[in-house]
Image (cartoon, rainbow, N blue to C red; front, side, top):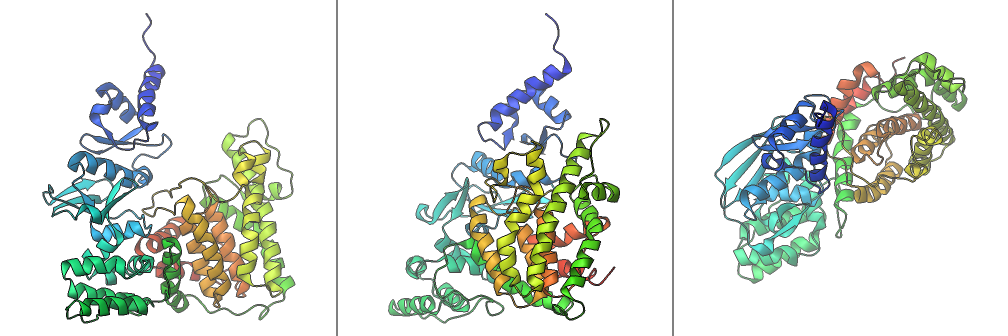
Length: 510
């Protein structure tokens, strides 16, 4: 019997890996693969060791040492590892529970877990992340729930148990969580059962801070009626940028509105003021400049996304004269299709800018037109048979991850709440500078499509640039690293200043 070839051996190992993945398994223990299969898959880059005895699958095209697979696997890996280690005797900290309740899936540098079997030891994980298992009494079963495999404090229990500093260190998540509380009775049962007069005063102040004065009043009066001396205390460092007079059931919308309002002032402080439509040139002159800058813009925007293009190719594609010869690589053909799609989408963007220069509300134009941009951007790939026509149907139906980013974009069902909210904020925003910076940032933060989000975000940015009379802004491919780092600072750390300064540095440059 002939010996198996190396490719046949690898295929056999991949079959075993596929068997585990078909069960939805992300965390793979060493005992679930034979030593031979495990070593072979490690050698060929199909799995990655997380810690001794634990592995995750890795896409075969991922560069060695890249963090994307780990960040994409983080939550499911931790859920499986913790279940294996502690059984049911564990839950995330109240603070982390709140972040998950409000759909903030950003990968934390350190995940804090409570367990009665914890040993207060730190488990090092890839890319400077870690897991700390703290020995602590578990909350009653009624105060816990499971979400995506993670054991959490319920929202009311978490708000009662959370540390006071959480309100100042993570105000967006804290306010979004408070806005989700249906009624004061949700937290009152916990406050009364535990005799938590100090916490009651803190939560009353927190509810009043977000505009829920009726909830604050009920907490105070009920606690006082039960004989507790409660003194209201606002735990936040500043007034809420958004007031919630009633319960807002969508945590996605809560968080986006809070982010927008909290980031407005830093943007206004660090981005040049708008000159206004028509203040320096006519609409015809503005559109002429947009047309002239197309080749430069397309080259840099497509190059940022990893396409192999040249100004010459872009010009030939623009004129419909690019025909790949037999020597053209697959990558060159895909890049040419992307260039053609960019040209078609650019025409739609330019048409929208013309409406804005004519006096139309910029947010209304974006709301109507952005789906057309997406369809035109990928229509050539559908015609070529690379994509299915159904891929142009609309917002994504699956999860998506950003390379090397600790930010996890919103889940598909969240996108359908978040995008209308973004369009509303663009319509309502009076300052063009804010529409420019936050329009781009929030769009890519949501990541509504499976592909093309960066290009779409820059189109949105430049449409909003036109609404303030700013010239079209090209993000140079040479500055890609700084561009991505600035977006990461905003997405993960909530700091919009680096991104604002980055874009401001190109305003007015030729």
